[in-house]
Image 1 (spheres, rainbow, N blue to C red):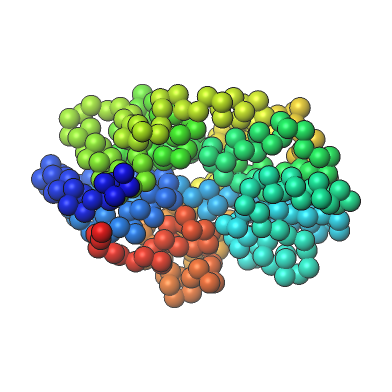
Image 2 (cartoon, rainbow, N blue to C red):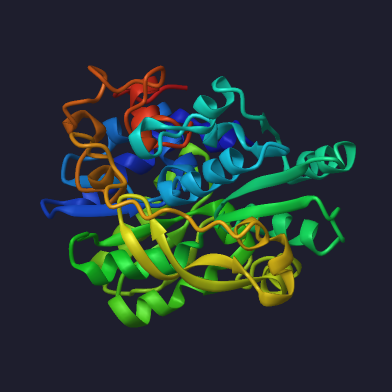
Length: 365
């Protein structure tokens, strides 16, 4: 099956059809998924598309858009309590915060920071260290939020709490389209997120902005088909949400996962790095689960940070799809995965990190 979705001849033939149908008009489509950007860049899909079709990356990397105030909150918790273990996913470990601080720097300074693969690892750590407080940095879109919710519903140990940095996708799409700053003719919607929330979750954007949308899988053929579907919608004026990834994504998504999230979390305004405050785009804990909110438990408020992107870094514009990574003066010269100056270069799902790794590749088998 995977081989079929990477069939070079089939992909090239579809790209040829797209070139013919695109004629001389300009089209700009945005995806909002780090894995989509990886597929597009790794397989050189932009190299076979006509020059009048621009496919840009939006805010599809949860690590990249996690606001430094959340990171600073976790660091402040560590600094104020000696008997604390902070657990985090590997992608977050080196993300720079205020003044370039990060969890990796805290580790180097002697604080107890552990990289875990899942929240279950953090729970086990709390049970094995009942003389210490374990705080888990819970990050991610709707894809990872159900795991956090499920864990909190299973009576975790009293010495366990979280910093919730979970964000949700539909509100940020609403925010971007309303801003007028991001002009696109269509959206390639994220497969993993849509597996949870379903394709229906985006229909309000059709009513509000008349923007074509297609949920897409992660193979090269998935992406090319999705772009062809978007192009057809634009040309025919038939605006709707289509589901190219029907083999996995259902209209209503994963009902059990959504119930778990709704039981534990409430939607709240949240700051996105590089974007600002986005209404109802964050997941905070409901009152009955506040005992697991590390900020409340230890009475520590996150410090306010006026500038969330380093001077000279264009990650904010990259996240909005306004510029390519190569248009940032820091890219490759100063900012690399080994010395990241912005969040888009840290995560493996970051647009800059992907561009650095693969460059402008041509279509390959």
